[in-house]
Length: 130
Image (cartoon, rainbow, N blue to C red; front, side, top):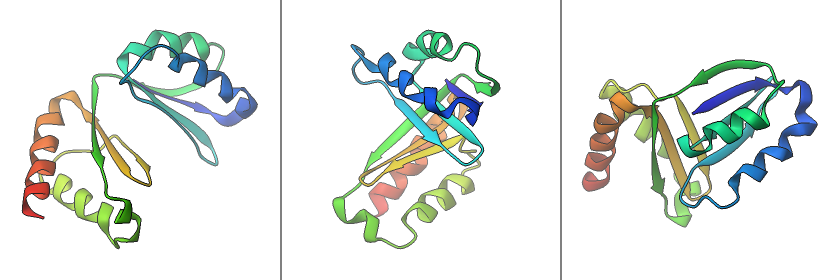
């Protein structure tokens, strides 16, 4: 699930981290931008997130999504155009990316469930070719 809300209560966001307790191998991501905050959580957290965000203005909610996470080498932050390389191939396969989440050594692509096989196949082809 993805929940997007406005930043009117930015000070309230730390409460979202409480929903992580006790659930392993699930995705929880909070990204604060200039005008909005995006929260990406695994389906197991949907109810917890809805309860935590009661009273907040929701701009949109998306469900039926899948994530593909790539573990990147520690030197990946020095590679020019690394994300472009993935975006180009995924776009060529006709797969819309709903969201991208990155850390220094991980890249997670959020796509619709209907597109996950094509996205995974494309990423696998890229990995084998390199």
